[in-house]
Image (spheres, rainbow, N blue to C red):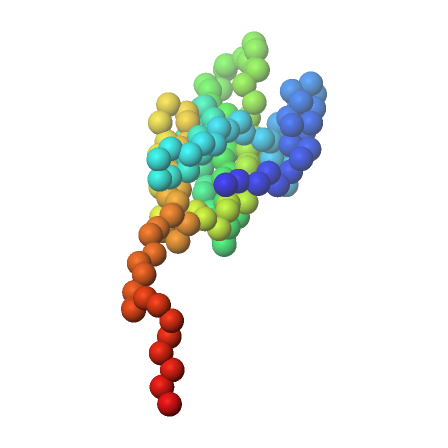
Length: 144
């Protein structure tokens, strides 16, 4: 149902972990995700801990789904001194090419406990269906 758009995404993620460089709007960091089918819908779960709901942007154009989010610094008092900073800040993004068998008009999104969950119904035209046989059986009649 999905096709990966960037084969080097995992290498970028590893390089960011090693260098400590976080994502920017021009070069966002990856966000981990799970994708699976559950009944008559496709579910995508993206990890975005510490991201405010209003800092998440979800777009779909034709069959390209784009999720962008920004983890902003926590407001600190003027006299606060940072002792340790391991949580990455910056911009995170994920783009997915959705199959034509998914109904992109009815995508729903929920955000709870740092996990963004997208539910995409399977399109009616992609579901198996029975075809009724109509008319008379046998050979067609020739009139003349």
